[in-house]
View 1: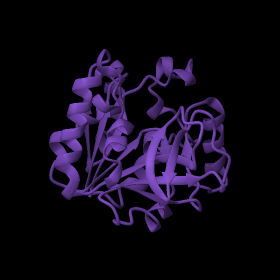
View 2: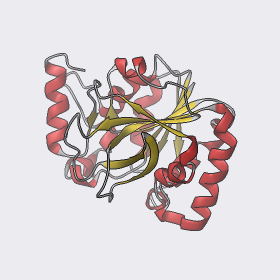
View 3: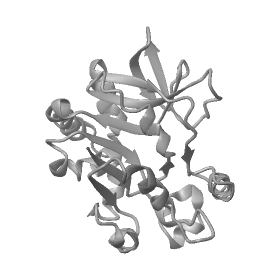
Length: 238
C-alpha cells in the first residue's frame, strides 16, 4: 500500500507562526519533532512508499524530509495552492494508478492502533469516521450523512449528519481507474473549487464507513490544537 499526504496549504489560522514556517514543520515537542513527522510515524510502518505534495514554502518541507528513504516529495507552485485540494491530489495520480493507497492530510496525526480498525476492505473505498454519539462534532469538521448505515454524503455545511470524516481515505487498486477518472472530470468541471470529497460523494455507492470511535486523533488547525498535541507528547499520548 502507498500513501499520499496533502501538504500544500498556507495554514492561515496558525499565523503568525506560518508566516515563517509551513504548518507541517511546526514543532510538536521539545526535541524538534514536527507535525509532518507525527503523520509519518503512523504511515511509515504500513506504507511501502509515501508521496508528499507540497506548495506553500515547499522547499523547506522537501529539505526536512530528505532523511526519509520511503518518502518522495512532489511540488505544486504557490499560485497553484489556490486550485483546491483535488488539484493537489491529482499531482500524485501517476504514482498511485495501479496500487492500493491512502489519502491523508499533513495536519492529521493518528496513533498506530488506527490500523487495527482501518481499512476493513469491505468496500473499494473506505473512510475513517467518528460518530456523533461518541463525541461532539465541531462546526468546522467534515460532516458525514449515512443512509441505513451506508455512506450518503459528506460536506462541512451539512446540518443533518451522523458523524464526521476524520482524515484517512483508503482506495483499493480495483477502483483506482474509476476514482482518478472521476477526479479529473470533477476538476475539469469545477476547477479550483473542486475538493476530494466531491469525488467521494460522486462515487458514494463504492464508499464504506469505518467507525474508529476508540481511536484518538489530532487535527492541527489552531494554536490550541498545537498545544494539545504538545501536551500529548509530554504524557506519552502519541
